[in-house]
Image 1 (cartoon, rainbow, N blue to C red):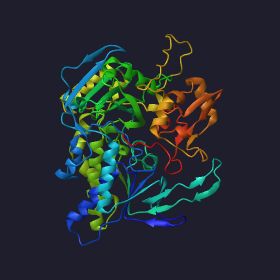
Image 2: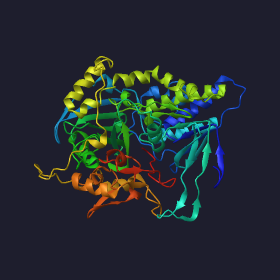
Image 3: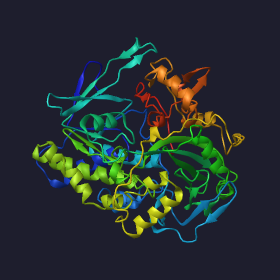
Image 4: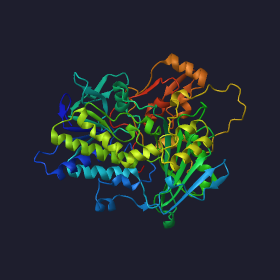
Amino acid sequence: MPTANQTLHTDILCIGAGVASLSTALALLRAHKKSGSARAAPRVVILEKSRGIANHVLSGAVIDPTAFDGLLDAEEIRRLPFEAEVTQEAFHFLGNARRSIPIPWIPPMMRAQGYPVGSLSKLTRHLAMLCEAEGAEIYCGFAASEWMEDASGRITGVRTGPRGLDRQGQPKSNFAPPEEIHARAVVLGEGACGHLTERLIARSGLQGRRPQSYAVGIKEVIEMPDDPERAGRILHTFGYPADSRSYGGGFVYQLSATQAAVGYAYGLDYRPPETDPHELFRRFKAHPAVAREIEGGKAVAYGAKVIPEGGLFSVPELVTDGALIVGDGGGLLDSLRIKGIHMAMQSGRMAGETLAAAWERDDFSRAQLSNYPRALRASNIWQQLKRVRNVRAPFSKHSLLGLATAGAAWATRGALPWWMIEMERDHVTLRPKNTRPTRRRVPPLAASPLSPDRLTDVFMSGTTHDEDQPCHLHILDRAVCRRCIELFGAPCQHFCPAEVYRLEGEDIHIDFSNCLHCKTCQIKDPYANIEWTPPQAADGPRYTRM
């Protein structure tokens, strides 16, 4: 990277070193090589805000193997860092805290027999190695804070945030000013609710027909007693602890003979302001159907992120002048299966092939880049999105309506329902706190090695932030914050999976050093009064096996 006050010029700039950006870079460089062009390969730079590759990526992860189609050859697929593939799968409805009903016939859309199961962190690091072997440059610890544009509004690059500021915003001895990276095209692969992506969508009017809707996904890695028979066994659940008007489900994936992944995803369009997704996650783990799958284990790693669930109607336009959006930032996720890795990688492949053609023609106009969304709409990825385009929305009304709609959508390959079912934005669904509780508040579960409290989980995420820096979480108006406390009872202290927000007297205190960069606060705050911005580069969680 350039030193302070220098400018870097590159041909293609990818923001975020997740699987979508890495797939874009890999497909671009390989497509150029395969073309036999006499023109030199483009310079491809990948900018990652975390300290190391994969420090900020998190997923289940059972991976639809179509992720690798056209991107990796058979030998490369064989060498991917997976320890198991799905050998046994179960699907349960959890009726209450004790009752479980096994579904004897696993719905076709949920079947994953033979799919690889493992760590997205490991896959991401492996893809990064392949990209570097093809000539891509990856720089970690540089957070893109704003884009740059020319007089016509075309995106021309990004500017990183300054480093070495104290909490008052004054330069310290290690101060480094912002750096500029100019590019012919910028690929936004920041993940769900990305800082630059969301602002670009809003500024350029790229929004889909329906607002994006999110869930917060919470995950732990569990060390288990050695048992070779467990590897490849997976469990999916729906029902408890979600209520009939909330969308939630969990999983247990046996990753190897000694390691399991357990997770819970909960839709952020829930209504009760006291809802605590981390506590729901702990209650999910305590259910007998789940507890027996992780019995004898110990939680050793933790993380959280938001998941884009809005579906096809929430997918924005994916191209603007000088920029493309890939992966979760574009809402490319199967909201029924909660699977997005294969869509992220395939969107990256199509974006990379589009950029290779643009490089050969020396044409990065919006018209040329639009070949990417055209390829996506002609692909199986788009058919999957179309099939489940209305699956998520009815769950906001009632779980039974959601299940009926999901069945109809799958049976008719998305033809029914044919209209767009409306959804409220996640931040407007909260109802005022109940000043006269009609039911006794259930006390939180006791902490244990298998069910840590929230702060212990945060410690296991490895998240670190220099505390002598400006707070990257901004409450925009403290007066609005006080109205929120009065009406909703400070829901931020409940919905944050990292205990960043704490009510002290009549004000909210922010422990930004706990932040997992999940963006739940920016999405769910009922007054849209919290803004997440990138902290000083390299700060945040340090996931190694998520």
